[in-house]
Amino acid sequence: MPLWHVDEKGAVPMEQITQPKKRMLSGIKPSGDLTLGSYLGAIRNWKGREDSFDCFYFMADLHAITVRQDPAALRRRTIEQLAQYIACGLDPEKNTLFIQSHVHQHAELGWVLDCYTMFGELSRMTQFKDKSAKNADNINGGLFTYPSLMAADILLYQPDYVPVGEDQKQHVELCHAVARRFNGIYGEVFKLPEPFVPKVGARIMSLTNPSAKMSKSEAEDTGRVLLMDSPEVIMRQFKRAVTDSDTLVHFDREKKPGVSNLMTIYAACTEKSHEQIEQEFAGQGYGAFKTAVGEAVVETLRPIREEALRLMKDKAYLESVYQTGAQKASYVAEKTLRKVYKKVGFVAR
Ligand code: TYM
Image 1 (spheres, helix red, strand yellow):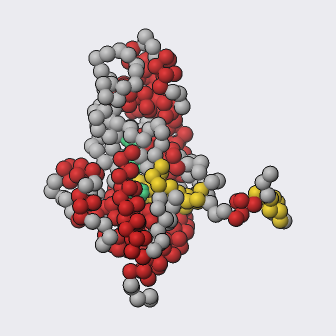
Image 2: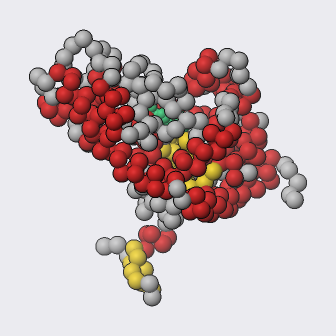
Image 3: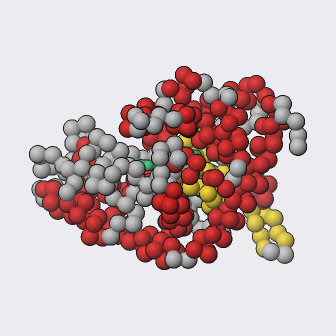
């Protein structure tokens, strides 16, 4: 039998009063418009958590400038990303939604953690290697130390879980290593967070090149689907999706990467298992399958797109959300930063 706490507001299970909620935190760089990959790999896994977790989600604009950005486009995308977070189901009354650069503690802890992250660790990061290959004329210091800033983003809030797609797991593991190193020197300053990767949809690939991740910062026409794409564009993208010379809808990432990617997307949108999908399309060929996947994606994204379009017109509301979010985030972040500054030996202001 659970114990109940009763007061003038009603009855609440005792454990909800005595145990503070666990915390979740994650972010996305506004370096491009959000894709189906950002949604299935990350945001879908963030929503609906607010009853069990204290949730913090942000637009990682500090991270976006590690690659050159057009300033006006970056500003536009940052605000639109907030509208899309809300449209995806993140209620700002119950989740703390904020812009990373509004909370100065991120950059400050980022610098401190730079001094506790090793050159060798940073050199091994897959994202650094990929991004340096793609931006050979701009391999800047920020691109290299990006994971220390990401560690700061996380550790400032002492979260239990960091819900991310597969590609960010390595960064969360590095954050763990940095936190452990720091705690080893100064005592238990940081909670060690766990990456929280979805079972289905953690790695959505390009529709035209299924060996590459679907990415928001790639040029158009690279087999990506944007959250804000119209149903016509989405259907066109799926009709053009690369499959193979076989006709069998069957899951095999190695031998059938295109079909397996489409199956993952379909499974994520319909909650059907691979076996159910294989049976559904047995003997039908790829045409019907691609159309069905396209339609499932259209229906998944339709309400999000419609709500985001409505919210994007309400600039005053969005501003109120990110201002309140920054205040709440800053309050939590400052507590950790103050502790860290004291531990490393800075004189209190
Ligand atoms: P970013 O902006 O590249 O991606 C944001 C989130 O979306 C997931 N994701 C995908 N998942 C499945 N398939 C895909 N094709 C796909 N593309 C993107 C990513 O795994 C990620 O969860 N460094 C981070 C942003 C960040 C952050 C943080 C995240 C900055 N600070 C602190 C968590 C905690 C990044 O570049 O994600």
